[in-house]
Image (cartoon, rainbow, N blue to C red; front, top):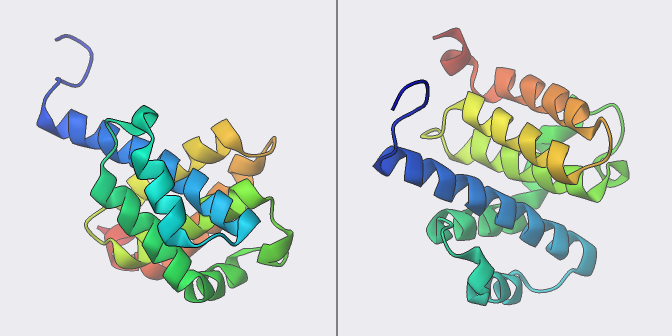
Length: 152
């Protein structure tokens, strides 16, 4: 297969994680907007047949991690933002919280992957130029939380 990454288990796992992140961002957004119980939101998303192919365990871990740890995540994000988090566009807020969770709690995921996936979500679903805001904030956070990894 010339010019591209070979298809295989790693590529499938990567696509499944990407889909899990997209779904988790949507679930976190729904939680932020409705204050609906996270368990109900998880059940709703997991029952949707359009969500096949996602890494469901990762999806659940992201949503539960963000919902349960949102106060700590918000505190980590606050110094990286030029305005209070509650004033940030809700889509970008969901992306920031999810990426902050991954940077803090998932050292098995390279920081570059976290940032690239978050920027892609912000580009696709966020406000115009929101991805630059997300990238800047997460770059600052990664320098704090993943300093050793960034040096290596």
